Amino acid sequence: MKILIGGDHAARGGLLVKLLFLLGVLLGVAAILWVVLLPGIVVSTIRARTGFAARVEKLSINPFTANLALTGLVLQNPGDWPRQDFAEVREFRADVNLFSLLSDRYVADEVRIDLAQVTLVRNQQGTLNAVAFQDGFSGAAGPSGPAKTSRVKKGFLIKHLVLKFDKLVYADYSGRKPVVKEYDLMVSRDLENVDSVTKIISPLTGSALGLVSNAVGGMFRNRPDLLQDTTGLIQDAGKKTGEKLKGLLDALDKRKP
Image (cartoon, rainbow, N blue to C red; front, side, top):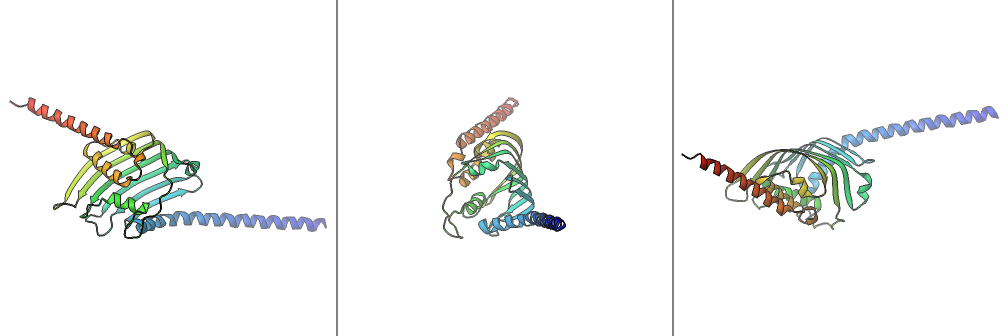
């Protein structure tokens, strides 16, 4: 009897090892499928909800830590827009506090945003592509159907934000003649304790700040709490631009014979 019991225990132990091995294989396969299929799922979701085309070089999301890492994201306007290019994101990383997802404010220890170029396009109807893109995600009324019910509004806090923004292009096709302006921003800033969209765009200056503020204001028109002091920022940028212009004119005046 003792030999039989020992043999029974050994058989059960062997079965347990096989089950654990099978579980490990299944988890490994699931992880591979998650990595391989996730970019395609995100791209198809963006197109389905917004009509904008997208490409993603690499995307990973850890569902256990709420960390996100994205590289090589390219967004393009729908085919009926006068210009295709919209945004090129070299890198986006977010280290989010998992438990904050259940609270009334998202908290991220660190966020990195590296923008190679953003092209704001206003079409013949006067619609800005950034606003149209946001409306698609927010479920605003449009060709796809009625507006969806609004969700609970949540704030955010980014303890450390690394922002890089190389180039901004503004293309306006709403008038008789297209107007295209390019701004080599070359912004590279580290920001602490960011809790509003206004603070994210604060490193910009002059006309570029006005354009981005206009776009952001349209995108977040239902969230004025996230756009604190935007008007003050634009006025301050305009004041600084005016001071630089005045200094240039004074310098030229002194050089007159």
